[in-house]
Length: 105
Image (cartoon, rainbow, N blue to C red; front, side, top):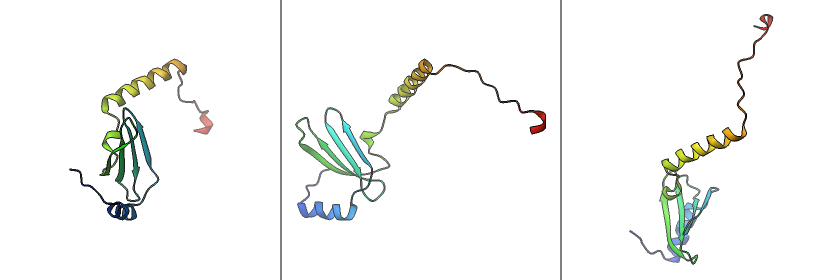
């Protein structure tokens, strides 16, 4: 449910929540921006349309904004691509543990 906020309401929330250091920009079909408030786990959200007009402002309470999280399938694909990239660039070297002289053991 969306509730319209007056300028006074917005100022009050901004005073209470403040702004934290973590910012997330998502440039997809629509631009989305999140900034964690000074209260951990409380996020300001702003969604913009293709014309860069604000379509929705939110306050989200979560570890991380849900839309910004990677999907499990995307993470699995990313791990596979990372493995392939390393396999192409890093030579395979078989290394055993170093053998220490008996007097150092």
